[in-house]
Amino acid sequence: MKKKILYTLLVLLIAFILFAVYTVNNPKSPLQTAVYSENGKEITITYSSPFKNGRLIFGSEADSALVLYDKYWRTGANRHTMLKTNSDLIFGNNTLPKGEYSLYSVPGNHTWDITFNSTNAYFGISQPDSEMDLFTISVPSSTIEESVEQLTFDFISSNSESSNLSTSIRLRWDLTEILIPFN
Image (cartoon, rainbow, N blue to C red):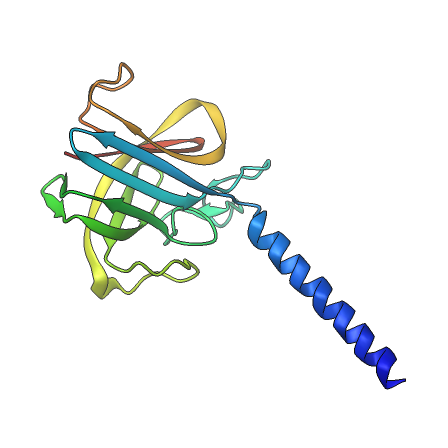
């Protein structure tokens, strides 16, 4: 009888471990990387990229939106979005020294607040310690015509035909796009 219980517990333990390994290796919001490499600057943004899956993405709590306006968002899923740079970057009047930082946001209907935080903790369930915030910038959001199914970060360089701005980090999801210009 004891052997039967031990074998059952062993099978359950193995099943749990296999499930955990499968979940880590096949997340619903896969880990993505956006890379920029020009003029000696190398920037990497690492983020977990959730899918729309028919949900309302940005909006109010009353509308049952996934990401609420005027509330902290880790700007991705599962873990904080991380930005790593090999050189200083200038965002407006703020300088981000070379290094690795977490990036989080407070989305709004017309503008977003983007905060760069010096923590490199990877789990984004709670808002990072505000004492570790380096600076926050506000950027306008715009509506795009074609829905983007999966959260996507990329870069638009000043050479891009689709942009007359300086180089920017671009975030797109559902019908929302924001550009975060930097030098």
